[in-house]
Amino acid sequence: MQEGIQFKVTKFLVIVLLVAFTITTFVSTLKTTSLLNDASRMSEKALHLAAEEQAHNVFSSLEIGTAGSLERGEMEVFKALLQDLGQIEGVEEIGLSDPSGKIVYSSQEKALQTQLLEEDYAAAIKKGGDIFKSERNSSLYLYRPHFMTTDCLRCHFKARIGDLAGVIYVQYSLEKLIQAIDDMAEFTDEATLQAMLVGGIVGFVGLFVSSIGIFFMLGLVVRKPIVELSERMSALAEGDADLTTQLETNSKDELGALAENFNRFVGNLRELVIRILTTVDKVTIGSKNILEASNTIRAGSTRQNEMTQSAATASEEMKVSVGEVVRSAQKAAENARVAADNALSGGEIVEGAMESMQQVALHTNNIAEKVQALSSHLRGIDQIMALINNISSQTKLIAFNASIEASAAGEWGQRFSVVATEVRKLSEETSRAIQEVRETVEAINLEAEESLNLIHSGLNEVTKSSRLSTEAGDSLRTIVEQICENAEMVSQIAAAATQQDSAVREITKGLETIANLT
Image 1: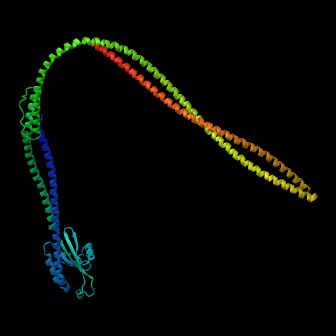
Image 2: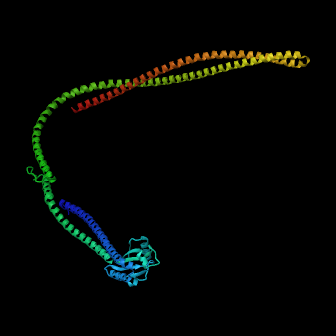
Image 3: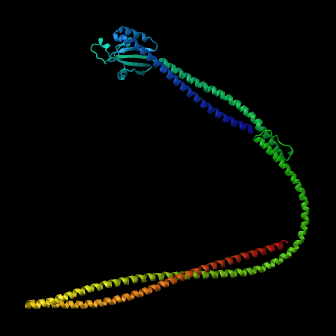
């Protein structure tokens, strides 16, 4: 069974309301439970403080009532006071211990001669003159140690001022407090359960009422206008619609806007039908005019056929001429490409020659540097030869002086004279050899200077040739660029001629087609 929009929207809204109600109930329950727990904790704290205050009051009454009897040593009066205070509601035990912690006076006979709890006794002594509080099981214990004063020494002869006299204690029952806390927790749980139950019932009733209201409201506000619109659209689809009637548009919402748009659509459709009928009449009249025009066109088509045949003949002649132009342009383009390739090869050769000239200039410059270095070394050799010649002259002079001395020495200087003569001859030969070497060095130096001058002249010529080669290379590159541009232009002309040939062929085909049609 198909569900209507009224049921679908109602179901969706009920689910949304159910989720919202569940979340609201859960949050409200948590909040209520939190508030009840806070109130319970505050009440528990207040009851606990009240119980402690009651125990403190009993303890204060004990100290105030027994102060005089203890100072005067009236222990029977003290014991009777303990019995009276022990009858107060909530007081479980009240008494006094000796300095060792043994209970010597108590409202409970069974507690006499027993020992105070060691932990509480030690903590109370450590506390000094303040009240020590201890809570254990279901009882509250209050302790205060008392120390010897001047009045106490009248009965306790061996004691000293400040010694521990004993510990007064009160055991107060907390059972009623615990019972009250348990009752309050039980009340809190019951209140929480009742709040959840009441909230659930109220929410369910509200959800049910809201669902019924939403269902009927959707039926009246949404479903009814949509059904009316659907019926009108169905009538339009079947062709039985009355284009003069319109939907009621009382509401100002989206459905009202939809009804207004539908009424506008029906009005436009009515105007469109009227225009179509008017156009049909005009078409009938126009068809008669077209029939008359077709007769006129048939008469002119014969004339057009004759003109088309003439144009086709002229186009055929143009096609032959354009074919010749295309072939010439393609051949010129091929020649231009060959010329560009040759120009590029020539440019590469010139660039290679330029690089070779640069290498020659570099090697020539290195040779000039080597020759100049050789000339410098030769001048150094000449200086060395001059020094050796000077040494040879000095040696010759020394040998001459030695010969004179040997002659003066007579027989004893003959051997020395022979040596001096040999040294002089060696010095003379050395001078002659140095002179020959100097002449040879000077000749070499002269040749080196002439070679250096020739190398510099050749280097200048090489530099000039390299510059001319560079200029020639630049000019050749410019020529190559112009040749490449000319080749590109020729290729473009050939392409344009090819396109023109294709266009002429298309024109010829078109004229032939026109001729066939007519």
